[in-house]
Image: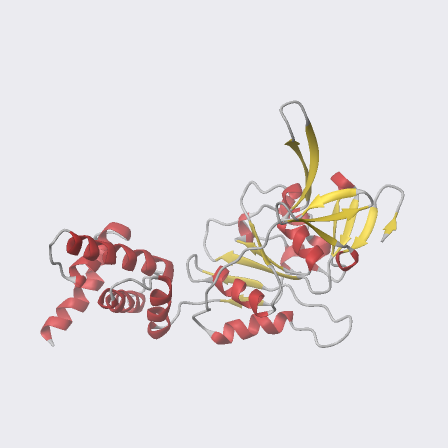
Length: 314
C-alpha cells in the first residue's frame, strides 16, 4: 500500500477482510476508511448447454505462468439464451465468489466504484458508510465480476473501467481518493445482447474485451434438459411438446429462446395442474397451444398445432 499526495494506492490482495459477527457483513479498512463489501451471488444449478463454449470461456481466464494476465471475454447472444447462466457456471468452476453488476442506460461511473451512504444509527444520529460496488468487491476478494448486459451502458460509464480492462488492472475512485489494483484472481466478463436496443461500444472498450464468444441456441436434447432442470415439477409431456415447439419454430426462422420455452412450459403445466385440482381433465398439447398464444401470440401457435396434427396423423 502506498499513499500519494491525495490518493491511496493499494492492491486487493493486500487488504485484510474483516467480518461483522452480528450481520455477517464483510469490510476492509484502507488507511482508516472502512468500506463495506457487496455480497456474492449464489445459485445452485448445473450448466446445461454447449460445453465447448464453456471451455472457451474458461480458457480465456486460464493463467498457467507467473504474472500472466487473464483475458476479459465478451459473451454475446440473443436475450434469453443463457449467457448469464453460462458466465456464472464458469465463475463457480474457479471456486471463487461470483458478483453481478447489471448494466443499464442510466448507469453512472460512480455506480461502478465506491459511494458514501448516510446510515441512520438512531433517531438523532447518523453516520457515513462507504459502500463498494460489486466491481470493487470482486477486485478486492479475487472473485468473478459478471457485467450483465454491458452494451446497455453508455460510454461515460465504461470509461471508468478502461484501466481495469487492460494490463494495468486497476480502478480509480476519486470520491474516496483510492486507486485499487485488482487481486490476481480477479476475473471479468461482460455479457451482451445481440439486438438493436443496445448501445454500440466505444472502440477503446471493444478493443479490451476479447475474445468475442458467441452463444447460440441449444439443440433439442439440451433444451429438453434445460426445461426439466428449471421446471422439475412440470408435466413431462408438456416439456416434450415445448422442446419440439422450439425446435420446429427455429427451423422456420423464429428465434424463440430457452427463456421463452421455460415460460411456456411453466404456464402450460400450471393450466394442467389447475384443471386437475378443479376435477377437470385437459390435454397437455392443448394447454401448450394456449400458453404459446398467451405468451408469444396467437399466430405463433401454428408450430405447436403442426406438431399435434402430425402426431394424430401418424
